[in-house]
Amino acid sequence: MKADHFHTIIIGAGPAGLRCARTLAASGKRVLVCEKNRIIGPKTCAGGVTCSGLSQAIPAQLVERHFSIQNVSSTLQQARLIAEKPMVATVNREDLGHWLAAAATEAGATILTGTAVRHITATEIVTSQGRYGFDFLVGADGSNSLVRRFLSLPITKMGVGIQYHIPSSLPEMVWHLDPKHLLTGYCWIFPQAHRTSVGAYCFRRHMNPKGLKTYLHAWLDSRKIPYQGLRAEAANINFDYQGWHFKNIFLIGDAAGLASGLTGEGILPAMISGEEIAATILNPGHKPQRLNRLIKNHQRHTRLLLLAGKNKFGCQLITESLILALKLKIIPFSALEMATEEAPHARTTEEDPAL
Ligand SMILES: Cc1cc2nc3c(=O)[nH]c(=O)nc-3n(C[C@H](O)[C@H](O)[C@H](O)COP(=O)(O)OP(=O)(O)OC[C@H]3O[C@@H](n4cnc5c(N)ncnc54)[C@H](O)[C@@H]3O)c2cc1C
Image 1 (cartoon, rainbow, N blue to C red):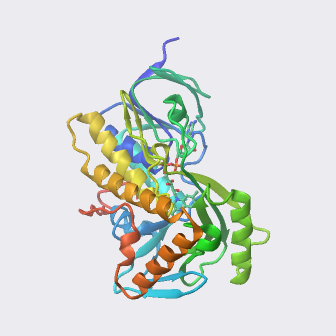
Image 2: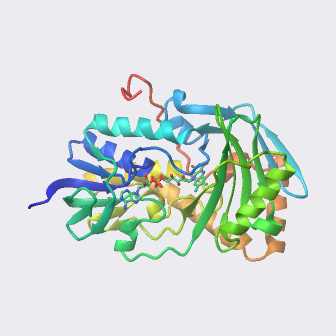
């Protein structure tokens, strides 16, 4: 039987895939999104977003909490950074996923959930539900991307994050750096409205997931944060960016390695790359300026990570200097952000019937 044919097939209904689908479908293209999970949204993620970035691009109702105070500490010093306006916010990934999916569906995209893509050829995909043909294929399938494997692009730079969701909203946002043990990694407390993500992230070359979990437990114990009996969630973060355009195949979001290796920030990079690649598919002459800016910052983050991670002493020096510079307001907290939007495009409820 002939496979059902689509202009573009997108594998993965995360922020990257859904943003890409919405843009393409809004221009009248026949778009299919295949998502292996039955429910869209849930993802191992702390939900931290910057106020100059993602929180500008989503409706206010999706923001769980705003923070104008950031607590950044190391084993040697503490900085309590107070700004006039909130610097960081949190979102709930389930709610964000529902909003993104509703917007893509509203634009005309077909989303098949419970549909795992098992095999890819030059012209079609084979899923758990059947075969589908494409003119363009977009890999939005996250850090362990099948599309990336199909393109024979290895991943040599991978981070790992482990988190617990504490069933209460802790008062403040915290970042804890410990270069002696984690090198460039860190532990976090990111409160949402009714729960809090507490976790740890590091470059896999610096520490393995087991060591990271042991470190996280000791840190939570030291802060008297109870995690016993809660489910630990762990996931990789690919930051090995090696390009996004491969003939009629594209990579976006974590599949392209566009998350920050330094901070793990990946939601807005996923959305920006999804929108920019859709615009490029629609118009091959499109100049992806937002994506280019993102890639430049991504390279800056990766260079800093590789430099600081060379040895513990150098890393300690860089980390302590960074915290001091933040404390003395020599550099703003926003200097740590990777994905920023120069022209915020906040959307209202009227514009988004999905709400
Ligand atoms: C512990 C942790 C904490 C994090 N915290 C933050 C944070 O605070 N802020 C931030 O900005 N970023 C954070 N991130 C990173 C962020 O979660 C990712 O960068 C972001 O989700 C990437 O979006 P994406 O759409 O590229 O991929 P994903 O969100 O991973 O979506 C990929 C989708 O593809 C689907 N899929 C995969 N394979 C297949 C297949 N074969 N067939 C069909 N479907 C498939 C998956 O089920 C998934 O739904 C964190 C990551 C981790 C691990």
